[in-house]
Image (tube, rainbow, N blue to C red; front, side, top):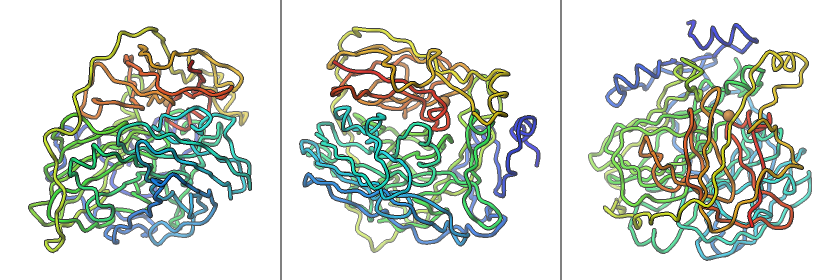
Amino acid sequence: MITKRNMLLGAGLVLAAPAFVHRARAQGMMDGGMSGETMEGSHTSAAGTLQAGEPFRHLPEIDARGGTLRLRAMSGETRFGSGALTPTMGFEGSYLGPTVRVRRGKTVDAMVTNGTGGPVSTHWHGLNVPSNADGGAPQSVIAPDASWRATLPVAQPAATLWYHTHVHGRTAPDQWAGLAGALIVDDDDSDALGLPSTPGLDDFVLILQDKRFDEDGRAVYQPDMMTIMHGYLGDAVLVNGQFAPAARTPEGPVRLRFINASTSAQHRISFPRPATLIGVDQGLLPRPIEIDEATIAPGERIEVVVDMSDGGSAPISVTASLMGGMMMGMMGNDGVQHTLLTLTADPDAPATGRVPERLTADLEPLSAPVAERSFVLQENMGPMQHVRGMMGRGPTMAINDEPYDPDRISFTARIGTVERWTITAEDMAHPFHAHGVKFLIPDPQRPEETGWKDVVAIDGTRDLLVAIEAPTTGDVPFMFHCHILEHEDAGMMGQFLTA
Ligand SMILES: [Cu+2]
């Protein structure tokens, strides 16, 4: 089938043909809705190596609430479905990492050892800790066989955060390969709510990554010039490395913590049962919000409680697409759609969680912004970029005309203050992320844009009210960047200090 996306890509450089699956027009899905449709059985890979319905595997957990965390980054091989082995990477395993639990008020002594053959790092995404512990700066890169030690004072409310590698120039391939895991902050306030919170029973961590497969069912990541510019879109969206697995749940509320760990795809998740959004990037919302779908850009997280009290099975579906945006026209509307995960209520499993009407206190009015900054995210997609691409140098991307330079500090922000940041995406929509801060979006357009955030999809121009939270230590900066990892690696990143 020739789609607009394929035609556009075909006009540029060669891209591997999509191996399989039903590609749905996102516009049609939005118009018609998909909650009543069943998509089970409509997807099998050309190689027949991905079959829906295998039992859902919960990620292992590491309890760091006692104050100690030891992680080892490793290389390995992973079989997705029944395909050929794919070279992958993970923490404490061959693909992805364990769910790390930390607790507000407790400082964690973390040490990460690099057992891979290349440089890695461990950025605690969303954890607002001093810059020398943040893991995102070039000073925090861990050489092969070396270790990195970080002191993490956990001082923020309960939230679903995550950790991933962040080495400039290779974040996309290495995170694609699996160097990512969940990081959950607990606290007394959230414990008292009675939300579903038993891991493996009614509280699920769901790490989403899209993958493209070759004829042997091996996952492949070979970005070309067009992929780097417009984004990488796989044939299927895996959850914790599984294709459309089946999970047993209690006959009651089930908490799903979604983490978009794709390099550049956004995921629209649709719920066929009553569902409430209870949390976003930086923690729980003041009140649950009823939703039937939600969209997360790369780096974003949401917590959703699905009500399984009517029993039976509920397929939760996903539509993955490129970020699209004003200038990209239809580019963002050509998605990959299938069942992400099927929940099946077990009448014999006790339902112990509930969703109270009040989750957290209403947000207090912020103090007036003390500084205003503007950031323009630039792909610079001109003829020279294509020349550079053909010379094998890849594109150069930038923020405010400045491609990433580890020796440049763009600005210094004052800790404890609020700043107004105006972010503009010139060519396509980009997910903007900054380390050491959290922000509010004054004009939220979707429930997912309410509450404290650390990633926002920018299409056009958006204002953010940014709370400068964490200190920089020594000369180690915080990073701000596009969370399309191919763009970040190509230079759409900058550095700042706090004082
Ligand atoms: Cu971008």
